Amino acid sequence: MQKLRETGHQAGYELLAETLDAQGISIDQVKEALKNQKIETASWAFANSGTRFKAFPHPGAATTTRQKIDDAATVQRLTGVAPTVALHIPWDKPEDGDYVAMNQYANAQGIQLGAINSNVFQDNAYRLGSVSNPKPGTRQLALDHILECCDIMTKVNSDNLKLWFADGTNYPGQDSLRGRKQRMEEALKTVYDRLPEGSRMLLEYKFYEPAFYSTDVPDWGTAYGMCQKLGEKAQVVVDLGHHAQAVNIEQIVSFLLDEGKLGGFDFNDRKYGDDDLMVGSVNPYQLFLIYHELVSAEYSDHKVAANNARQVAYMLDQCHNIEGKIGAIIYSVMNCQEIYAKALLVEREKLAAAQAAGEVLEAHRIITDAYRTDVRPLLAQVREEMGKPADPLAAYRSSGYEEKIQAERGVAATNGGFQ
Image 1 (cartoon, one colour):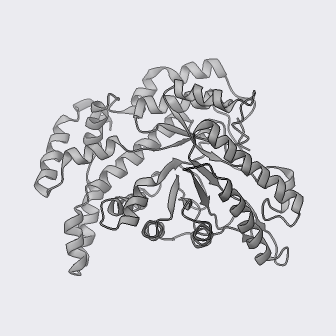
Image 2: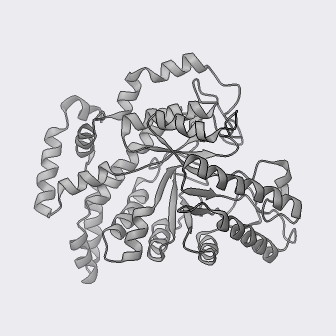
Image 3: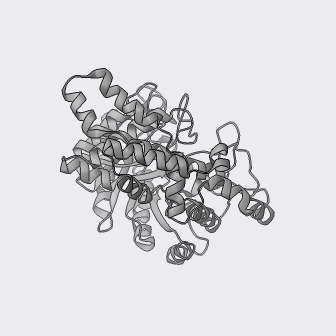
């Protein structure tokens, strides 16, 4: 990227445009898709967060929701494709309780409030689970909180309720596995019926941690089955870190798209477990293959998959423990832009023909050729046409914003909600 900044991107962009034209791919359509890309940032990622070992405080990290909104607005001003920020309740509960005013503040900064995430895992009462807890009183406590989140959605004009449960057991015989399933389904039905008009319930899964023997929503199949029972407003969230090693995530994505049940993503990356590293930092090729399935579905003749692909919510869910916050989030957005651009360059008609003919190597070559294409000149051109800097990360580093918030906020004594 340094060389690109020094030599300019115009020549590279023009060469790529000529190449795409020869392949029958419209550069204007590709640019239009890139300009319409949307990545939702997460409020908690702007605060100090870390591992069980340690959360290293970063100078200037946000501690209030308004600071998180300010930081998210900075990402949007520099990238142009991050117009919403997700909230986590109660971490982002306004001190005066006025969610309407908080929403107005976000709008005044040039962004909107996005998905509402519930928190039914930090209260001491949830030691044995939340909505799956064997104690009716604890289940009601958790349910009341999630229903409150439904009310908050109306106040901040959010259309996505995001649910993740730490519920599970640590030992065989600890609780009835079927009983926990039934309690979970009962709670989800109550929440589903309370959803605001035009909104969705996005159900996330995780195969282990913090429960180490059984997890009540352990995989995409369980989440899918529960969403099928609930109805069309319930869809599955795919967190890239919530899978066992070597699981084919792009195949899961393609299945859910075909069923119209892919609700959204928590974008991150990992090497071992649920590491929450920056998206595309460890396995960018996997991210490309996921985006390829999304693009293929969107431009397909399969109405269910195509409509589903256009409604997917893309959100970053990452833990920036050693690298700072805002710069890392900007770079993550840029990674998503780059991978999406590559996926848009796949010669889909030629790929379909090669697949139908059983031309294994040719089909594979078509995919890998798109992945290996240097799309950075294209993205620089798109950003400039949008009135944004060609290199958002470099622009952030030279903007003085980091120095400003470090001077104003100092090193936080608290972490802004994340524990």
